[in-house]
Image (spheres, one colour):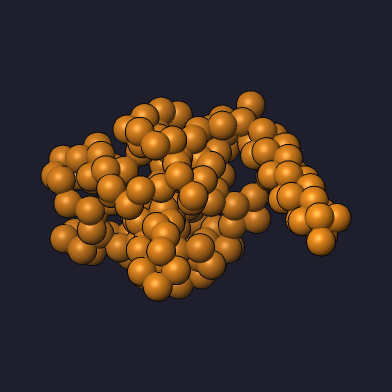
Length: 161
């Protein structure tokens, strides 16, 4: 069963531990600029938003790759990057609508979330549980439940007026 990283933005404290853990896991150094996840701070709005590869079913990054270096790993359900085929053109970085693809500032290679081969470390160390590794179907159910709760809250306000 395919799993995805669910981001619950309202739980994110902006601690950026996910970035540190990711860079240590993949690059062996504690450097957030080398992570596959990035926490974007929205100062004026007052919240933090972890940005990570969405592992799109019809991934634009796969479609634009001229060397087929990106492909879906059916077992894990993620978009996998084959560095032996990648020529570093960075078209995938440009094509990603979510900012999930990045460039390692030291090696200049393209980087993206690989779900840590089924054990995402960013999720493991996210103490406020803003990141969760869940069954893909659970994400749909959770979003529907949240939308229904918001609608019920709005309706109760309308009835009270």
